[in-house]
Length: 298
Image (cartoon, rainbow, N blue to C red; front, top):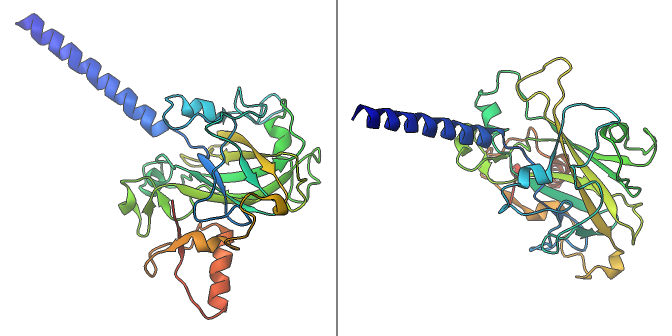
């Protein structure tokens, strides 16, 4: 009997350790763009066609974290900007690249995986931040492109080696999204995917793919730490076509606010909203048609 108790106790300890490992993996899971859609232009419809990062494998894969995003712990010329195996273009047939036209606004969705709600809940410390997303783009992709060179690119295209541009910068926390089940962490939070936007340059050459780098600075997730670096990146390609040859052949919706859902008054915090949507809200207010702050539909 004593031996049986010892075995039972040992199995219980092993089960507890396994549970802790699983929970730790759940907490430490990171984020990446799950899909891209056009938020303006000919391809912006009520049911837009989705595009995906390079060689996206789908959420049914147990390796999606390591396959889709790349953890960067030092910013130098020896660190590639794209995940291993994703340094060159490539797509699975079930997860194609996005098709867009020059000047289109592109929307990316991603899950916060605890990085927002745990910060809001105070679990990561009083000065913790879920970080900032930087969108960079180029039509001169290279398999050996490093993170240090990309971070030198500027909006005017003159920074660094001049081979790319900074498309946009947005908070990781869009001010509305939250992991499903944690909506009560802050008033106005809506369970589901987060949204981030960037605009494809109007100068993008038709007939040539446009490569985009999602770069997420997560270095202050437990508060500021001198010289600490923790970034994540994902890489994607967009097929650029002429507006006249766009498949649906029409601009069904001109601005992205048509795909947004309105919350009850004062429920959605303005702070942290993507400035593209905030601009549309201000336009409506200026027209005397005051609307409530935006939430984002799934």
